Image (cartoon, rainbow, N blue to C red; front, side, top):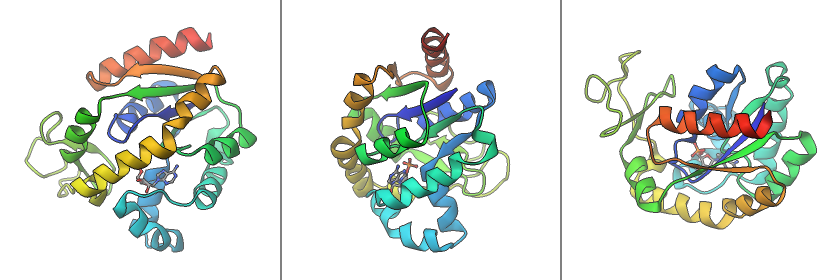
Length: 212
Ligand code: AMP
């Protein structure tokens, strides 16, 4: 199954993808996670994109497209994949169409107010990428990852200025993709306001109807 997850930052794309990758047996490819890993490992790519990520702006299309092209060429993508956070612009979507076909594009819908609530309470484990929320999904021990015992951190781009910038970048550059994929008959709208397991079940039903 070849899937794209679309939706504003904080809609839960990464959380649902983490469930779906196990259920469907396909890799979860998050361009944000790939960039954060490059930053952590201080690679040339990481140094190039560090400031861009902290501000909430988009990494240039050429850089992002090449990174995804390399990732999709890996063996584990032959059976399918979940692209989370890519494409984010029309040129990225055009480039993806040259690389591969898609089975469905899931559009996770969430109000602006809820996006801000979710992002500002989000905390993460740096080494595993596991996501928590101060209110909706707190760790067992305040500020500590349940598995590794490491201190949780707040992504620099989950601070208020960057959240507002990411939302306006989303509305300007990424929202046009909703129409782009609707016109291609690929889009499924999913209400992302309920719990992760309910959102996954809803999506699973929609995808089964669409694909079989
Ligand atoms: P995310 O984890 O998906 O919220 O992505 C975090 C940040 O990584 C974004 O705010 C961008 O700076 C960068 N990023 C992730 N995916 C893309 C993309 N497809 N195009 C450009 N920049 C991206």
